[in-house]
Each structure stands twice: as structure tokens, then as C-alpha cells.
Length: 169
Image (cartoon, rainbow, N blue to C red):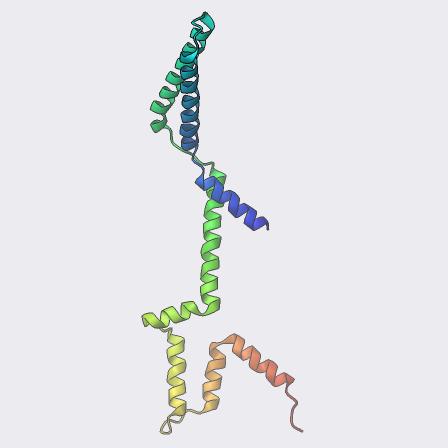
């Protein structure tokens, strides 16, 4: 659950643009100032208060125009720790993808499709072929010994089976 929260926080931090938020809010302020100007133009009363309201709205409108003019020079900066979190999240996602591809066997299938077969597999295939051929001296025992030497997990499984199996007397 914590990993999910951290991932979401990292994604939100990567997707938020301060300059974009400034531009959107400035546009909203300008729209409100325009509404005030339109409302003061509709008022029949030409008193000093209405003129002051209109003058203030025009000042707001000008200030927003200055913000829009200066905004292209603003650069978004993320804090160093947000960059670290983003890189860690990307590294974790990459490691998870590699693990998933390896554990599911898809990576091996892709390697075989591309024609890249590891040397160990080629050696095993050659020994199996020699074992099956009648004119070669290799035996099944030698094939099993070779496969156990190449794969420690297979060797451990074979030892465990040998221990669990009742010995003839």
C-alpha cells in the first residue's frame, strides 16, 4: 500500500507544472476582472465608487497581462528529492519488468526468436544429441552429470530426491 502511495505521489509531482497553474489562475483572474468591468458599465450610477471599481478591475487586467508576458521566462523546477523518487520509481518499474519477463519465460522465448541461444543451452543440446546418437560413446549418466553441473538448483533437487528415496537393502 505504501509503495502505491509513493508511486502516485511521484506521478503527481512529475505531472504538475507550476507555470501552467500560474497561467490558468491568471486567466481566471482576468476573466473575473472582465466581468467586473462589464458589470460596472451596466450600472447607471456614474459615481466615484463605480469609477473606482472599474479602475481597479482595469489595473487587475493589466497586472494579469504582465503575468502572461513574464510567464514564458518562468521555468518549472522540481525539488531534488522529487527527482530521486522519480528515478527510484523508474528503476523499480524496470527491475519489475525484467523480473516478470524472466520469471514468465517470455525473455527466453524472445531470445530464441531472435536467434540468441546461450552457450550453456547449446552445450546441453549437443550432449543430448550425442547421447541419443547410437554411434557416440556418451551415456545418459554423462548427460545427467553435465546438466547437474550446469544448474545448481537441479543438482540440489536431485540430491533431495536421492535422500527422500528409500535405499534398497
